[in-house]
Length: 627
Image (cartoon, rainbow, N blue to C red; front, side):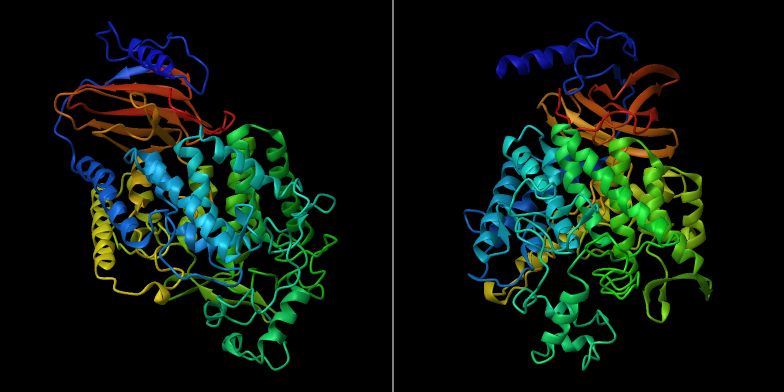
């Protein structure tokens, strides 16, 4: 292991040795993709660090002591949450994983070395704890829906970006994906004949066709504010009836008869689990499953006249358990959230299929959802409103669309029509100032970010980074003044206090929106490795900003904040090496790169911009290691 490390460092140094030129020759031989440093350049200009660079490094460094305080307050020495001894029902393990979900990503972006073993310890501890509660089986949720699975497993997916060499993570990835390839006889979740996932509730215990009062016992308060799943249940008139023990059996009977058998679009989020297994292994059976399943849903849209149906019965028929209605399914057009579940799941799946194939046709799936609601749009008081629900009365619940999904789509496709849709349905002119707010999740500022990378909001990086640090301080204050007893804490208690807030780092470093919270993979335009420490993320003292995107070119500003020591950083085209750097232009010179990686040396105090011409989605995607 030691000799291998020495060789890697020697090879890295040879990229720059004996050269007085700013640009290193492109003729340097390239080793294998997983260890290649690629061609190299040296940034020689020296300048005081810009404000954004100081804030970015401050965040990367100072979120770590905040992390330690959070973990010390709320976990036992073994990493388990300081909480109650029992927790019934099928809900909750997602919230356990969510409490620390972005710790592996913080490490992968350049957080301190102790983060990775801490993140692994916490993941293992949550898994053991919720296994004891009864929700987790074989280290995976026994059965639940894919909005909640998605919330759970982004934590797991980030380990591949942090360190793909973790053998236990890779083994789990294959085993978890196997639950949807019917490799475990206890979990026959997929019907390959009809190309459908057999229930909205699936997992390591297989499809769940009948739910009980105990399954929903901890979730009823959350469902009470939403519309009823059906309008025609005898004696049921309000969402508050979820809380009435005498009325609950009628609600559950209707759900079990109409919703629990067959497929729903929400299950498209399972494609991230299979894509994760492919990124670890390159095994084509995972890729084939994703393509087969996404194309099955695309065919259902065609069968339904261009409208995504939200329920498919056990034999593959649209509306089979709904009296022929294409609406009314679990987490579908009506209940409980409406539009956002349909947009999210189709966008996540399309991005995964595109990543695995390079074929942009899969984005017709989320576009079909957006076209339908745009076709029903109306304007009131200067705002465009679209329907968020469909029921027996037709389209209703008109509200402005969440622009983050429109921006996610455009960021993946860079298609002018997807960009035009943003202008038609949203209000980009309002994205010229920061309105910072954070609740559950780590997103919400996609609009201002888009304005910035298009050159219209130059102050955005320092504003969002500064606001992020303020949010970390606010959460620390909440932690320090928290006097609740463990039995008083809701299952969401810790995720609301997690001081690791990463949206600003993701946007500034990767030139992309943060992942879709309910189960999306992180699709970045660029990624970073530290060759000195042979790990993912920025090296110490280095800051990086994707400051302009003009397809196919993006501009990256790199800074070495150390006054006396040089730093080396490796840039990768895409989080999974899926893109290719064609050229790198710097200081009036141009280097032909033609590689998915570019090595950059930063002498003490160096600061400079590189314009990178990208060819996107042309390389087989994988989780990559540092050289």
